Length: 268
Length: 147
Image (cartoon, rainbow over all chains, first blue to last red; front, side, top):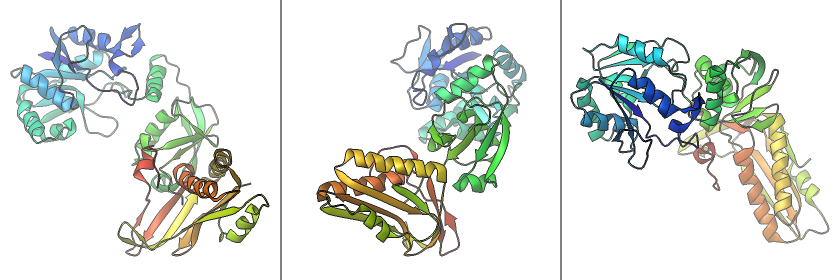
């Protein structure tokens, strides 16, 4: 089986290339995850854009998103199953890959984890069997670049992650801080006052509450609340206020803070 | 206090009077009204709400910014909250200045910034019974633009 690490993303929300971020042991994530995959497959490669260089063998990613990378890999290895892994999974460890491989069902088109976030299949910690390539090819030809749509059409085996945080990813500096707090065991419980306005008030069904959380930043707290209330707003469309002042998403929450998530405003 | 939020009818005359000044040769004002249609849908009423503590601070900051950026003498703004009917005044901006150009520019600046930055929301009630929370897509994405 081929193991491929996707490092072709543009990391625009992080502002730095996610593959080269360092979370542990002075090792970049691309080095760490590549080495991890190598322990499971001799045929481990990267998949990234032509203009990138990590000093490791790679298949060229056309740069049209992760599905185009998967497609390029399947073109390069048409008869192989491919374990596809994203490079922005800093809490992913050997045990998670080993479990995925143990659970692999070769009679299906793919084996993947279920997202704890929305109960849909994860697409980038997934074994794609060779039989999945027809559907991938069709989607690319139809200019449909969403890997989740493709997985929804495939016959796949879904498994639960071993830890709630196994597949936590970090797309923004605030999410990176949340990940680091998990890694360094620096998460502490605190009591936060929340007030809700406009649509968030309607969706939460309450105007205010007191909440105990171990989230480090408002970004982590909003993520937690999204799971509780199914908020429809993406974090990036909101602003956040702490103690009656606008704040950044990376701001560290303190005991007793009052936090307000501000949906798109519409005065006038 | 140059920015206020009110749950009762706005009083434009009072704000206009507060802008009177012997050094001013020009006055401009802007009134925002509740209109009976939005993107082709018949509107019955608008329900405004706000995060008052922060809205007041941000509104004051906008007026302070305007007083610094433009050669104006006074600037005032009041915004309504609550359930408004068609034709009601939702926002009023008043600016006086020595010369008209600065008054026009500052008035435009203030209303644009109010729409972008102040935590005030409106829920639209349509004639067909449905509701929505309209907002500017570009604002939501943080893109700088004018309305």
